[in-house]
Each structure stands twice: as structure tokens, then as C-alpha cells.
Amino acid sequence: MKVVAVLYPDDHPEHHPDVVASAARGLDLADRLSAAGHELVTTSDTGEQLDHELADAEVLITTPFWPVYLDDDRMAKAHHLSLVITAGVGSDHIDADAATARGISVTEVTGSNVVSVAEHNVLQILALVRNFVPAHRQVAEGRWDVADATQEAHDLEGKTVGILGLGAIGARTALRLKAFDVTILYYARHRRSPAEEATLGVRYARLDELVRTSDVICAATPLTSDTGALFDADRLATMKPGSWLVNTARGAIADADAVREACESGQLGGVRRRHLVPPARAGRPPLAGHAAPRPDRPLLRHDGGGAGPHRGRGAGDPRRTPGRGAPARRLRRRRTAGVNPPCGRPERAAATGLGRPHRGRLRRWPRVW
Image (cartoon, rainbow, N blue to C red):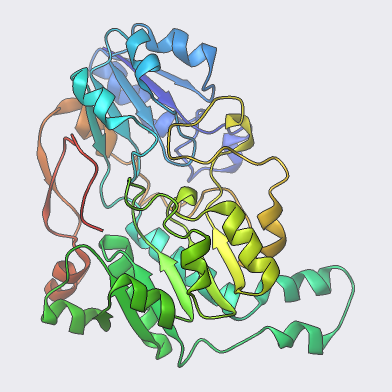
């Protein structure tokens, strides 16, 4: 069996011993697959070279942070492809309907990044509210203007934080925010039980109420037909003037032009968003629902949380990387149910959604968010 893994480049893997999700390391799968009689090919190319490798591949491993945009045309050229593994969470870079029609299984390493992204959400909220990055930039430029640095700095305590989506990531984000003495609202398709809400310290609100009353909004939802461009100009206009938007889920959840205009007008006090694709991906058209990359990235001027590559999953932590066994298990058992790792106390396991069985085979986008 031929397995192709498309991963980000790392020219100096010897300097990054804990980072296994690079093309140089190949998720540390090569020896295990070779011992079982399989072939592993790793690459960072997402164009013609990848198409050549996929022509006789049975398995494709991709990631949300160096994605392969797998549409029907590309699947048609991969005649033997039967399994696609997303080494992470979020498979919106794959045309699910086309995969279903062609009998290709699409799986994710569910739960692999929930701690990392939840901590990253809190980091970005604090960076925005405290005006951290502009203040740091001021000092780095050799200035010392305390008044300018503190004008837009605020305490998080006493604020209202709205979380859009309360899955494993949203729930863990809420748990971490409880310590800051904030009011936490959430909106999700399915309301949590009273016991879960009490454990997480959250209160359910309709989407319009959450948007209207929150000082900070944190998007923790998958990208679906319902959430694409959810934060357009009309919805942004209903937010509190000067409020903050944190979107570390999928960039297309917020309309980039509308967000930029809201920042320039002062309607938004700042934004932290996931950047859509790495620069090397700019040459290939994205799937429907994904905004095209903008080389000038005008939103960086308003990104008070600090810009960076898609790294919130904690790639440097060897205990939580998707490469530690999970893709190998997917290769050994194509259709299986698994159990996510526990997260401590039983009530927290139930509230955060970790500890419940999950399917190893995805045919449709997850509908709970």
C-alpha cells in the first residue's frame, strides 16, 4: 500500500526534535509502515508533483495547517485512493460529497488539538483586550509612549465573552476563561445540559443576542455551508462598538473585507483570525467556500493578537501531536470507533465532549457546533 503524506517543509529537523508533522519527519510513520510492508512518500508540494504521487496512492494524509485542497477533479486522477486522513481536526479542505460519491473514506484525528487550540484562543483574547502586540511593537521600534500603549488596553475581568460553538475546543476555552471572572455566553446547534453548563460556567444565548451583547466573540466552529461568511457586514454592524473578534477556527467564517472595514471604522476594536493558506498554497484555486489568499493581507494592520502561521494545534508538544500513533491506527483499521483521551474529572470529560466514542469514518460534515 502506498501512503502519501503532504506536510509542511522543515529544512532543519535536527533543530526541532519535537516537531514530527513536517515532510522531513513524516509523522514518524516511515519505519512502522515499512515494517508492515507499506510505502510512505512525504512531500510539501501541493501541485503537479503531488498529482503524480497520488496517481497510484491508496492513502493520503493531509493537515489543516498545510492543506491539500482535494476536489473532484483531483480525486478523479487518483484512481486507487480509498482513504484520506486529516492529521488534525477539520476536513473542509476536502470535497466531502465528491469523496462519498467515489467511495473514499475521510477521517480525522479527533481530539488531537483541543487543548492547544483552547489555550491559543485564550492567548489571543488576552492579547487583543490587553493591547499586547501594539505595545510590544512600540517598544521594539524604540518608542516609550505609555499613554498610547494603554489607551486601548483593558481588563478582561467583568467582560462578556461569547463563544460560537461549544464542542471540545469551545468547551475547553470556556473552562479556561472561568478563572478570569467573565460572563460566558455560548451559541450552538444543540444546547448543553444544565449540569454541563454549570461545569463550564456558561449560559446559552441565541446567536443574535450573543453577537449584540458580547465584548469578545470567539469562533470555535467548523466551516460549513451555515457558517461560511457568518460574520458579514450586517452581522458585524450589530456587535458592540469597539468589541473584539477572535476567529482561530476557519478564516472563511468571517468576511475578510467586511472585517477590515469594521476595524477601520472602529466598529471592531481588533481581530485575530486564522490566516487561510500558507504562501506556497497561493497558486492553486481553493475549494468553494474558501476565500482566495490576499498577498497584501490588509487585515494584518488590525491584527492586534499577533499574526502567525496556523500553529494553534501545538505542533511542538510530542504528547499531543497527531503523529503519535493515531494515523497509524487509522491505516491498520479502516472502519473503527475510538475513544478520545480523558480530560481529568468525569464531569469535565462529559462537558468537554472528550471521552465519548467517535466514528472513525466521516461521510458528512459534523453538524454539532
